[in-house]
Image 1: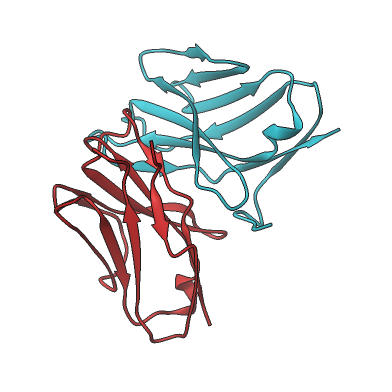
Image 2 (image 1 turned 135 degrees about the vertical axis):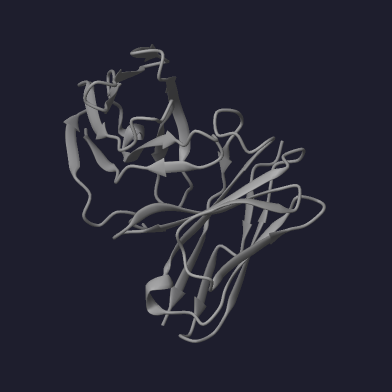
Length: 114
Length: 112
């Protein structure tokens, strides 16, 4: 059974640009959550999608957005990139979104903003 | 390799010794707790979980202890091996159960 797939693995962008990251969940999982990991702030929740609806959102500016498609694949977008957006972006998929059942992380996309 | 936590506390242990990693959680209303292991270049990997109605749970070579009075979790790893070297995070679940709040993490280094 394939795991959670995140693409691309590495990305370098320039300040002011925008970026789109992709997450393909485990087959049958309908929930995708996104987290940002930085050395300074650790792992922080960005948002969670279930059946194409955002159910929960963390404390991030509006430059961070996401969506989920009918096949449960999710994308997150960051507009007007800042140096501080450099981070490892992780997604987790689960059957229903409840963290105590089948919550599985991908390997992440490492974004570097220069 | 990549470093996920440049300023995290570090625990160095000798191969074969037992390791104890501690974590203070923030929300007394949290009712579900997880320990994750993260190796360089990978996402967090589930190790063991515990619900708030328990104070101890054992897995293979790992034990989690929960002290709700002082909002403290610990992860005990028996007979630590070089493959256990990683960053370890505790996480707590919100009441709605669909997001995790992570602790800062601890680097475990195992010396052979």
